[in-house]
Length: 433
Ligand SMILES: [Zn+2]
Ligand SMILES: [Zn+2]
Figure 1 (cartoon, rainbow, N blue to C red):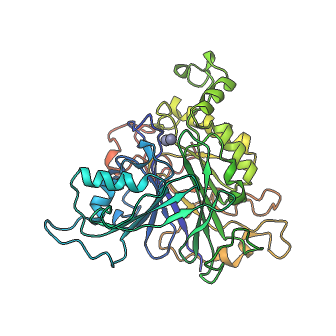
Figure 2 (cartoon, protein in one colour):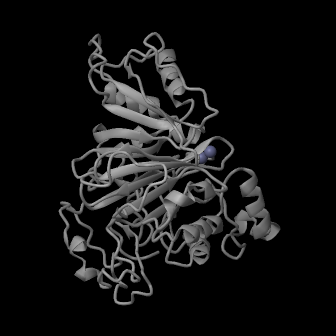
């Protein structure tokens, strides 16, 4: 059974935001066929972003069961308390469910996440009737946060302390049947993680115990790599190779003055922008593309854009040319396809890729792939730019990203009464910008 996974961006701004067109980092993975949602990062305003989703995007915040936090910078985690309060708070004076009951929401993240959540819930006198748990991904030098009964918040269930293996990686730290999750440390100003979500066509393999040095194991059907902020994610190379989709930050990028004079590209060189960006622990679009090339990613989305790169308000304008230039630089460094820049409420479909052409046992044409024929999702994408368009030429091994809409600010935010081209930046615009 193949499920049409999707990834929705609720927030795509760097810490310079939120801005008018971008909220800070928050992504939703619709990765299961049974309606449970997983999130990566949860910035301030995430709950409100759910409310502004386009009406045909049926993601509901009540379906969130797991949140993976990449790092503890404010633009990635300040929405957690609001989210937990919304999901876990019952009627006034209702008793908290017993600790023996499984938590409704589980959080995963670096050392400190447990204390962060616990202390803010306590300081804000937030009572919960349902339960949550925080599982921390620890390096050998991290000190585990106590989970003794007296230290727990009233709504907290003890979480796991998950120590990395001797390679510094968290291989298979979560096994949810047909989806397994790895994590790796990536270089940033603060301890930061990249998450790798591997999906398999059946629940029967690989086994629950994932060895430190696994013997040859079945290849995942899809591999979704979502990185936190980073200037060097090399440590996740062993886990991220042949990613179906790579989401990589591109906080800053040199934009020539011929495209937008206000960004003062004539006063800075591309090298100086890259140097400054790296010094802050971040990446440029070119760096994101170069890493996508290293891991052989089939799809690339650049995310976590500076507030000076707003989502274009209408096609053909200066803002659109800036975003197109960011995508061009990422694509050029990647060399395997057309990179896309994320925008708030963008939804990407993640179909099963066509098999690699070098594999003799697989058909080269995607239409001959029986897995690609199955499509049980109630709202499958009907996008001519989609999977397999270039399947006639195996050498291209192309995997187009399936963006459901172009530039969407959501129903509630879409201005009305504009002329042709200016007011149509929202949903269902099929033209490539
Ligand atoms: Zn950030
Ligand atoms: Zn950061």
